[in-house]
Image (cartoon, protein in one colour):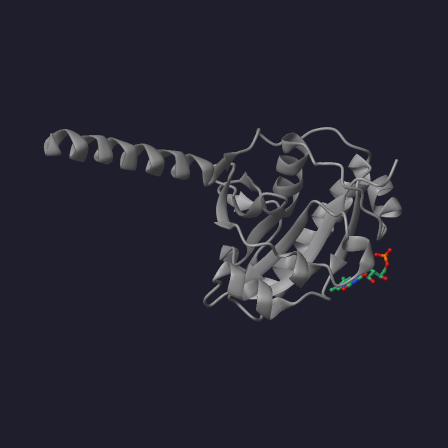
Length: 199
Ligand SMILES: Cc1cc2nc3c(=O)[nH]c(=O)nc-3n(C[C@H](O)[C@H](O)[C@H](O)COP(=O)(O)O)c2cc1C
């Protein structure tokens, strides 16, 4: 009898681990690497729009955004240049169901935290309904901020092409976010909020 109870418990434990492992990974569709408006038009139209509706961002668009920011496009290298190809940058996606670290090599997101970051991000009124904020972090004080700048510019251009609004934001509570994400040696560089305008 005891043996049976123990083996049932072992199965239940394995199952619950399997479920939690599954829940901590979000597979993304392959990014769409063609199309969009002409580059010069996107450069001309890129602009900060501080207006975000609560409309969800579909997984395809999310995958495209993350690829623009920090995807792997050639020889294991990124959609942006990085100093000595050291690729010192991390990109987190703050979504309604948690904070996820972008894993470009596997085209997936890994759950980093279930904490609600809105108290640390909603420092401006227009953030009220926003459903996607990227947080750029890195451990190289000289180069990581430059990498973040390249990434947010790529995202800004993609957003322009896709009809999404976006704003780069330094006015965030870095300490609170770093604590929630258990960042260790990485520093928070900047954030970027992306979303659909109100209809
Ligand atoms: C590094 C950086 C930090 C910024 N921080 C904020 C911010 O905290 N809040 C905000 O509303 N806009 C912020 N912005 C957006 C700028 O205010 C905006 O880019 C600037 O006014 C120029 O407007 P444009 O992007 O439409 O050309 C930031 C932009 C950059 C590049």
